[in-house]
Image (tube, rainbow, N blue to C red; front, side, top):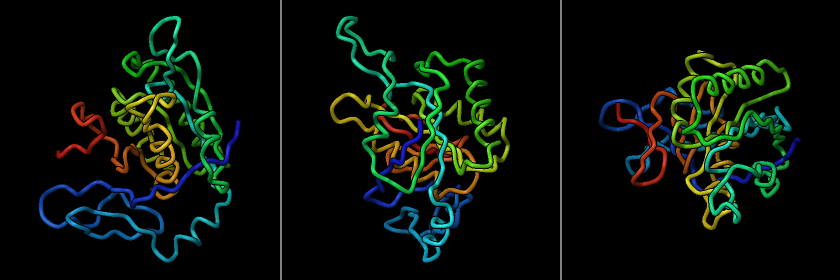
Length: 230
């Protein structure tokens, strides 16, 4: 199915710091039509004057969303007394977002906990991403994924696809979409926005951060994804 979802994040999205110390400089994770500024010691991304022209030339902006399961899609099964992946939620989540200039084509790859994802399943994700990239009517790819092994899948994509011709953005949630105070809709909305702004490559978009493949780390204490310092 296709949807036209999205909601613009209230705050500018944080992008990775460059290696080393001192004042952040231009980083390889750049955004189309954006400018970078050092604000309170943090590298921020802001729209530049030509971003409107860049975006308007691709209307609607066409995104393929590959759904793989993970916490973001878990629902409480009262009979089993546990969270399960029996009821897909991505279509429902997208329907709550409002971004008429974005068209999302949801493709179900699998529905598993990322801790159960092995090399064979990861290869399926790579194959699905490669197929999406091959289409001429696709502008970006977003992948919903469990957070425990999201970094491994991002690395597998970066390795297998080298430099993809389009942005590939992985996201997920620390709390399922169907529970209170879920971060699912926030992360998906930010991933859709990031997919529109980032240059070709593989990234994670999560809790206002954009992190390149190879530097994604799950912080189990803070329950978020962060960028590795090395």
